[in-house]
Structure formats: structure tokens, C-alpha cells
Length: 257
Image (cartoon, rainbow, N blue to C red; front, side, top):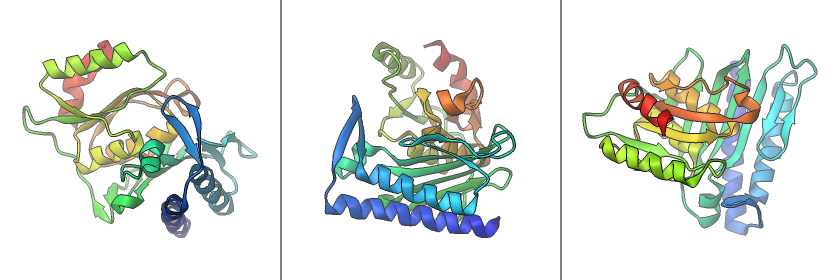
């Protein structure tokens, strides 16, 4: 299995670098919805990774943002690989560096493996259940911020009312908590595990954006919501993940907004 994961890691890096090359040569972009774009790079990266995963793990299923769910022969005993080929497509299209490839593996209703690769930033995150989380080979450990120094990442879901997001910002202001919104939930979750921000909240996130980052945070010592509860794999769920004390301090307040 270790050899297969090494091959997959190389494939993720190659796919991310291919996305860079495609962007440099010119993009064709279509719109799926408000601030929701898809480029030929999204499709090319997903297809490339799907082929590699099928060759390495033929018994498993596949869930991709662009291609949807492809079940395995025996969906009851095998796992599912969950992929966002480019999270932060708007940033990617605009030439910003804040985008990533996200790959996770789910089996027995638990996240087993997670990879997040941000090519423009040269950041490769990986985590395996019970084996820690790593950034470019260095093990990660989450620490709580000093009092008054907390910064959390936010996502804005178009599947929730905008007033809800405005109320959230007002609540954070009353709690003296700073916030940032960078437009790529998978990468912001990964950056919680590395300490760039201390937490991440979004009122609804899809599984391909959430799973790899949630495992990174859990394996680096953080606290996370149970995303896979209530069919989160296919339907998505709210996400709240943070350093342990910050998670406890804000948990009830975030879900009252």
C-alpha cells in the first residue's frame, strides 16, 4: 500500500503542475453558477487522477466534483476516493496562487487518507489516519493562539443566505476574532493544520472540498465537526475545524448564527 500511495503522491503533483501549464497556455472557462467556474484544467486534472486511482485501487469507488459518483463493484466493502481537481478555480483563473488539488479516501465512514497540493505555493500536505499530518515532509502540530490573537478562515456558501454570513462576521467581531476569506476551502483547512490560520468555518461545504483538510487538522491535533454524519459525503455539511481551545470557545456561537 505504501508504494501505491507514493505513486499517487507523484500523480497529484504531476496533475497540479499540468494545471499550471494549462493556465500558462490559455484557459477556456465556463460558468456553473455565481462565482462557480470550471476550466479545461479542472476536467483534465480530474480525468488524470481518476485514471491513476483506478489503476492503483480498482476495487474502490470515485467521487469527483466534475464527474460525480462512480461506485465500485461492491460499494458495501470498498472505499471511495473523493477529489476536487482544482479548489479555488476563480483564484486559479485569475492567476492567484491560492488554489489546490484535494484528494481524500473514505472507508467505513471515516476519512483514511488526505492530500492537499498547492502548486503555486509549493505546498504538499498529506495525512493518514493515526499517522500524523505533514507539510513537505515536516510533521505538523496545531497550537492554540494567544488570547486575542485568533484568526480564522471563512467560506461563503451560495447555498446559504448572505445575511447568515453577515451575522457571522458581526459575531466574530464581538468575540475579538479576526477572519480571512481566500476562496479555497480545502487549502484554508490545510492551513489550519500548518498554523497559518487557527480555524476554518463554512456553513455548507461539499465533501470534495472538506475531507482531506479535515483529516489534516485532526491528525495535527485539532478539533473538527463530524462531516460525514447525515450523508455528508454526498450532500455536504457545515464545517468547523480549529485548534482545540478555539474550537470549544466558538463552537456553540458559530452554530447559533
